[in-house]
Image 1 (cartoon, rainbow, N blue to C red):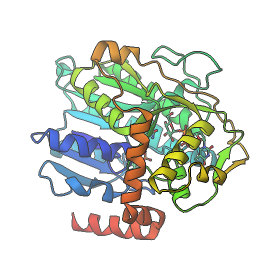
Image 2: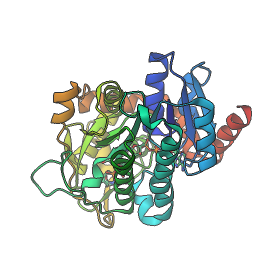
Image 3: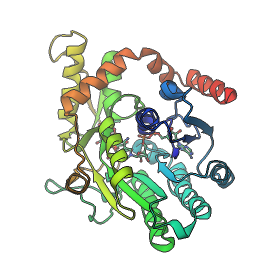
Image 4: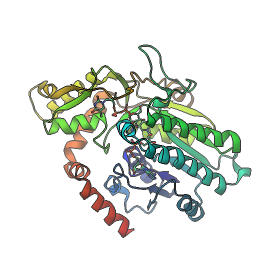
Length: 351
Ligand code: NAD
Ligand code: DAU
């Protein structure tokens, strides 16, 4: 199995789950180690016989082609992406390069490597991991579903929407066995602390101000990362080629509600007076083009595949806070970019 972006947040959680569960599958992790890629995430599987890391860019056709030749992958789970909306506002072109061109490169190299006579036999699978943001911004009512028309509004979501279209186009045009999953906001261990949940935890730990965009009224649907990884495993095992699956936490909160909830749990974990950290919240200038609300209808994946989120917000947030409190070294390293770069370089030089 080729896993792209396996050194990032969701990809590493996926590999840590899957490599021990499937010892007969060789997991090859192709990652270019951007600021978001961190090989420390994979320390528990680093020495496993069925795990192998390759330092490279998904847009590099030669690397991808040579990997297909060497390993004869039958499955691709494609996580690699530029994933942060605020960064896409600052510098959109890297999102086009990785999310659009990189995805098209993988699709084309899979097509070149795989035998079209076996496209319908269940031998191959290209799973493209995508986001609910491709559907745009909901008003106060309603849910996104697999049939909601695309309406991406940020450079990030436009690049993911484009990648989704390419994935489906390779499915329609060439018969490539493609599956797309569109998931809501994830949180959990190993998430880079630029995203809301780890940002709040880390800044609260240090008693730093916590910036909330606009009035904090925007709504997101929160899913614990282990539940997303379980959904991906379920879809790989039981999902049908050519299908799209919406995955979500069914746990919608305004940003202010979520942040207060997380802060209260941090206070509890650190034995601070109840509600003390709420004083750190500061309303700041809004994100440009800020989508108002996301909410995913998960009835298809529930009904057809029997998946549902197992963790509620309390369990997920407490587990996440505990992980950040117990992993100070990790935190120091990701916040000190030069240290992380050094670690990654040492690892790449060793392998
Ligand atoms: P992340 O930013 O934590 O990790 C991305 C990984 O991809 C990093 O390891 C990075 O080094 C690697 N990468 C980036 N560009 C690359 C390139 N050109 N070649 C090879 N590797 C490259 O992202 P994440 O939050 O783990 O998200 C993973 C996937 O899931 C993305 O496709 C994202 O769009 C999607 N997704 C994320 C969420 C979420 O809430 N985080 C929700 C739904 C879907
Ligand atoms: O919906 C799935 C998407 O969720 C994924 O596809 C993206 O990769 C992932 O980054 C996430 O996108 P969001 O923009 O929703 O996540 P983020 O954590 O950046 O922000 C969550 C909400 O919190 C959003 O409304 C913006 C707000 N926010 C964010 C930050 C970082 C703040 O108010 N303050 C902040 O400092």
